[in-house]
Length: 124
Image 1 (tube, rainbow, N blue to C red):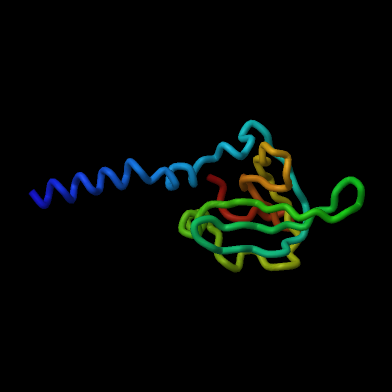
Image 2 (image 1 turned 60 degrees about the vertical axis):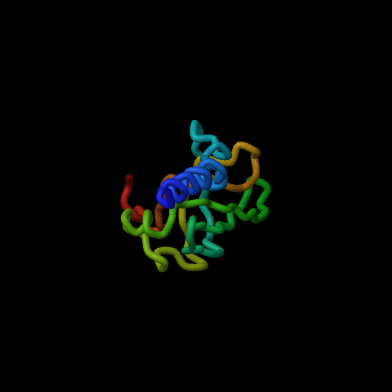
């Protein structure tokens, strides 16, 4: 009887927890488009559940804009050759992203290249 209750309780928790599924949605990104950004790393956040590159990019009007680039989890990125010291504040990089659908300065990480032309991490 206790095993049945525990199993039922687990199923109820799974059925009610919509945050896990919603959290991993990529619906906010326009995956049909890519945008290439060249700028200076303000911060590289090596954190769970997602890493981020905060990138300062000069726009067409000559003003600096901050872009937030969402990446995978640290464990996922480690498997692709990234580490917490791959990027440092002040590094110049070119990043390709799938932009946010709402037009704000952000996107999902696709690729990155260092200022010397070397690819960062391994391609998927």
